Amino acid sequence: MEQANIHWLIENRIIYVKRPSTVSIENLTQDSEQIIALLEAGNAPIHIINDALDVSMNPNNALLIRKATPFLDNPNLGWFITITANPIISFLGSIIPQMRMNNSSNVKIVKTSDEALKFLRKHDPSINWDTMNESQQIS
Image 1 (tube, one colour):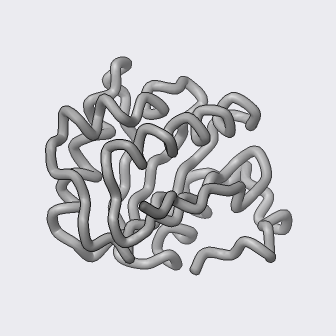
Image 2: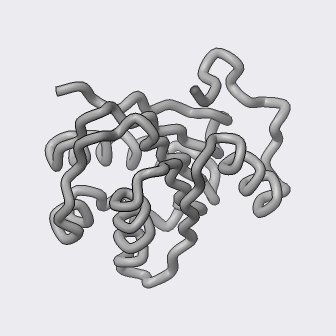
């Protein structure tokens, strides 16, 4: 099963996660380890753009998904933005981050990558957009 493509969109500030068409709990657990490493290496607040546009098969048990995504409890996490047009993923993407241990949740669901970037530009003026990784643009 294919893993997500996870990388810095803006070094130490924005993590971009491109999900494959099929996502499993095992994928989420492995992805979470990589995301935690980036969250620990970056400069808070670190935002995540979770691109799920290509996902056609996704786990639907919110408790299992939440258990597989401990990065949501990381104090360095800023906004968690999911890009999707799928209503089930949209629903899960809005409730699972709200299950954070600190009960503080900055969650946004959008339908396009442009929306995600515009949202972050508006909500975090400290990001230096001139340093966006041109080789790793949002697809």
